Structure formats: structure tokens, C-alpha cells
Length: 380
Ligand SMILES: NC(=O)c1ccc[n+]([C@@H]2O[C@H](COP(=O)([O-])OP(=O)(O)OC[C@H]3O[C@@H](n4cnc5c(N)ncnc54)[C@H](O)[C@@H]3O)[C@@H](O)[C@H]2O)c1
Image 1 (tube, rainbow, N blue to C red):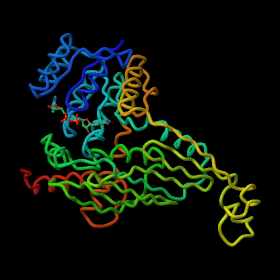
Image 2: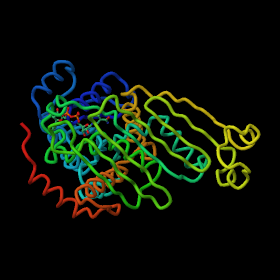
Image 3: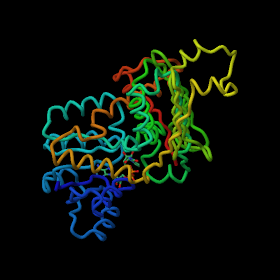
Image 4: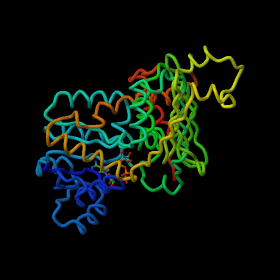
């Protein structure tokens, strides 16, 4: 049984703490929580008498000496808190995003490497969704053939002005380090690189639509890979919105929506179909042809319950810490840098109004972000 602490018990960290208390992670015991908001602490203290509460995370780490800590604070503080813990040899599960800039992430990863006694993980809970895991398996095994195109539309993270006004840090360059890309879409951007690898270049346009915020909540980006392209579209202001990943390979197609995955397989590679076909176009009408070459394999996968995904990652983490075996993790801390590279590149392309190489120069990104923060207007 490992002893675990949580820093930041707001919306997400509060849920992680509750999950530990409920026994959702059988080999972890919550021993302490920390939050800088006295009201949040008081309400937690009233509910959970046996768990020590702190307003200072450093004090909590030194006094309670947990085996592991979950960091669920606003983004800019992730690296400072995680570094402090890792340097004490305490394992860390950091909420997404790993931090705000690639430069800061690389420095945190260096600290983690210097402390191999501590496990370092990131909360990429969508990797535990069986639909994406199955898609990855099909790509890696060659079942979909050569990737020819992809698109990911993520317009169903609807957020109201009420949401943005709730936490003072949300959707600002100074408080959050970005908008929908760094907050909601970091999950899908991680999935893109997890499934397809990293693109060579990105060209993007980002907008603020229908909300009084200073960051982007509407994004259209083209990811240029060596042999194919991926279109990425995201927004938080449209209804009903959709969530749809399409990956087209030379031997099959995957279409993943919120609750359903449909895989269509060809019996032979499209190149062979093309070489053999004596028809001018189409395939469905020719029964003989269809029988010989094309078939559809439809598989429906039901997603895990929403917070089931986060519990999967908490459980992996606890086992990795208990057994001192990072190979049990679905996402290691250092995996956090790739999605951040994509986010930094999308922002940079939008700011410059042109195509950029991936990765972008981390120093240039930091100085452009600093300018954004300097010029940011105050939201009432
Ligand atoms: N994995 C997911 O699906 C998911 C979902 C929502 C949020 N998140 C992530 O969780 C993190 C927190 O988001 P949230 O929505 O819970 O925010 P929140 O504002 O509801 O909670 C953050 C809490 O951290 C506390 N805090 C701030 N600075 C602190 C510090 N230095 N020490 C201790 N406590 C501090 C705040 O008082 C607040 O209670 C973010 O990284 C966010 O992106 C992840």
C-alpha cells in the first residue's frame, strides 16, 4: 500500500482525492491534501476527518513524507510543485498539461531523470479509452496499412462564459498559458501524436469566438506529415459540436466518435484493388468485386465512464510506484512534452500567420508568450 497526497483539491484534484478516499485505488491510501484556498480546505476537512490538510505543499511533503503526490493545480505551478517533490524522491503524477512551455517541460524532465527512484507520470486519461487503444493496436500491427489521411474534430467541449469566469486563471495567457488547446485539447493532441507520431510542420489559425476571454477557443490546424496530412479542428463555443477522429489507411479506416468506434477493413491493400479493378469507379455495385476484395468489419466499443478513465491512470500510477516499475504506466511524465510541442507550434503558427516547423524554437516561444502576457487586457 502506498501513501499518497494531492496538491490542489479543486474540481479535478478534489475528485482524485475522493476516488482515493472511496477506495477506487486499492493499493493507495490518501494521507494528506493541500490547497491554497482556505474554503476548499475547510470543506474537505469537514468531510474527511482522518486526512491532514495543508495550505503549503512544501510543508506537506516534508512533514507527511508521502510515497507519491498528485499535482492538480493551475498549469503554471505544475513544474515548480513537481520538481520540489521529485527532488525529495517523491513520485509524481502531474495533471495535464505537463506545464505551459516546452522549455519548462524539458527542465522538469531533466529533474525527473536525475531522480530515477521516483516515478514520474502524467494524467493522459484518454489513453485508457479502449477505442483509442484499439486504434493504436491496429495502426502498430499494420492492419490499417499505410496512413493516408487523418482528421480530428473536437468541437464538443462546450464551455460557457460562466465557466470561464469561475476560476480566475482560466482562458488567459497569464493564468493558464492558453485556451482550449492547452486545457481541453491537450488530450486529443496527445492522442494524435500517440497514434500517428509527430508532424513535420503545422499551419494554423486560432480565434476567440463568442466569449469574453483573451485566448483561443476556436482552432483550425493542418498537420503536415511526411506522407499524409491531418486536419485538426477544435472549438468550445458551438452546440451540439462533435468529437470525431477519422484515420484512413491503405487497408482500413477507423472512425471514432464519443461512444463508438467503427473499423472498416479491406481484404487487400487499396493499391492492389486499383491494379486489379476493371471498373471505372465505385465498388459497392459490383457484387463479385466486393466479395473478392472488400469487406467491412464493424466493431462497437463503449467508452469507460468518464471518471473511470482518471481512475485507470491513478491505478497504473499506484502500481508503478508500489512495484517501482514505470513500464506499468500508460503515460510517462516525459510523454507530456509532445502534445506541448504541438500546442506551442499551433500557437506560434497562428501568431506569425505562417507555417512553422515542429518543434518550434522553445526560447522563441517563451519570449512570444511573454509578449502576449504583457499585452493581455484585463477581463472584468
Ligand atoms: N484529466 C482531466 O480530465 C482534467 C479535467 C479537468 C481539469 N484537469 C486539470 O486539473 C488541473 C486543475 O484544474 P481544475 O479544473 O481542478 O482547477 P480548479 O481551479 O478547480 O482547482 C485548482 C485548485 O488548486 C488550488 N491551488 C492553486 N495553486 C495552488 C498551490 N500553489 N498549492 C496548492 N493548491 C493550489 C486552487 O485553490 C484550486 O482549489 C489543471 O491542470 C487542469 O487542466 C484535468
